[in-house]
Length: 311
Image 1 (spheres, helix red, strand yellow):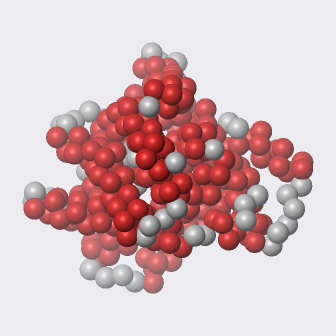
Image 2: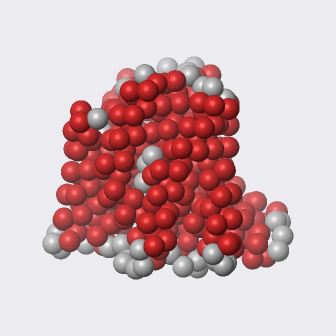
Image 3: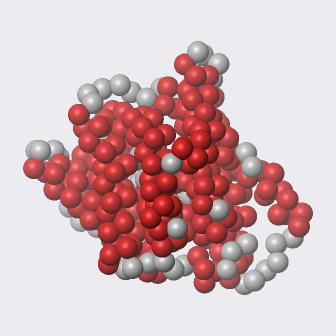
């Protein structure tokens, strides 16, 4: 475990650097927003296109792998909604809490860390988890929130979701790369080098932006954020592990990468969704802060455990 912990330290050092820069006033909230946009629309998209366009399409779309991840996540999703309902929370809040419990920081941290910790052969599994988050859980929360408020699911809602997916640069870069791979089009060396240079900015840029954004996170009551952080860092890996190892009996390496993906901290886009739909979001921002800080230990422990047990 010590080796894994040491290998993850540079990633968290970048997060700490961003946090410190924002705290001392060297990196403003506006600068953080612009850096996030650069990484989201350019650097991360370039890295995803490079990864997906150089993969064998049959290796990326493993339906049993994705089914295990979806069902394990839905198990925790449903449990979180039930617990929130018992606590007397509104439906919108229960859905946001459920989303926080299963959507990890895959685009920013997962893609940066896991290929280094598990090797390049893990990239296809990381991309599959990212596809599930973007294509399944992303639209799911919009359908549930808007459908509940309007009392029905209509064509306009589905059109909005479809347009949102088309405009999402991560969806576009992955789908374009997979189509490129599906037609077995050779990636020109010049394009590959361009994507390598641009994509190389995604890891430091993303981790620095995470740290800077943590400095501006709202502070609030700790009980619910601690509960949501525990859901994401502990119970989400447990739920997908049950599906991957017991129900679907996946290949040990695939299961290990899936469990590590589930151990990523709460994703920032849950906070953005909550803000967009006017659902109270302070507790979500604190959950992101706590889960990201605590994950320096939990990710190392999770990766070390699955490597010891299954690899």
